[in-house]
Image (cartoon, rainbow, N blue to C red):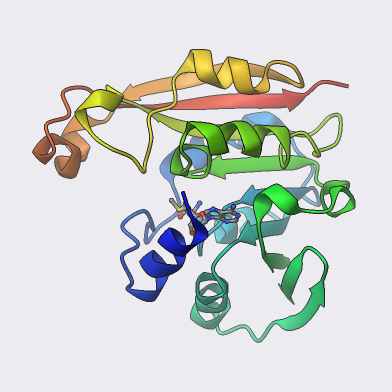
Length: 219
Ligand SMILES: C[S@@+](CC[C@H](N)C(=O)[O-])C[C@H]1O[C@@H](n2cnc3c(N)ncnc32)[C@H](O)[C@@H]1O
């Protein structure tokens, strides 16, 4: 999936993936991770997600990475924040209060950028990518997170032959294949959401679930 695909989605405001409220599954499952309030949370492929606001309201610092500068500027504009901006080899950093969002490629972050992230939150990131890029993503951003890092990964499961992604279906076997080497992965919830997603029904999808995984980086 070419970066131009995402830039075009943002410039034409075709951002159906963006939710106007934090994801309820985040509030349900985050507290059980037992993270310190000051823990820094990595949010890959962050868009302008309000989940970052929810995390910051819990006291966390948030490190997002996002290809689209438009998305990042909108995130700060919509909060009435005027971020400081500086450029590094890994991208353009926008910082204000608890938020640091990097406009750049999540597969090309410098390893030290992630070194002090105690947590990771992936909603609509893994499932935004086709299979080859999912492998790249797992082998770069996820591999560079430090031992002890904990978090949540939220996926969709549906018969891929019934609809083209994104969002793509990513099942438990694939999550294990991608992450088991470096992470302890436990599914904590799997919920049928087909009736909540009329777009999928209209496309002829016959089964749709969301799965929530708790992940912990092996030491
Ligand atoms: C489906 S959206 C999800 C956004 C956000 N996680 C949310 O829940 O609203 C995927 C986002 O990933 C961004 N993206 C895609 N490939 C990327 C990459 N290699 N590095 C950083 N961001 C990327 C896109 O621009 C898009 O905003």
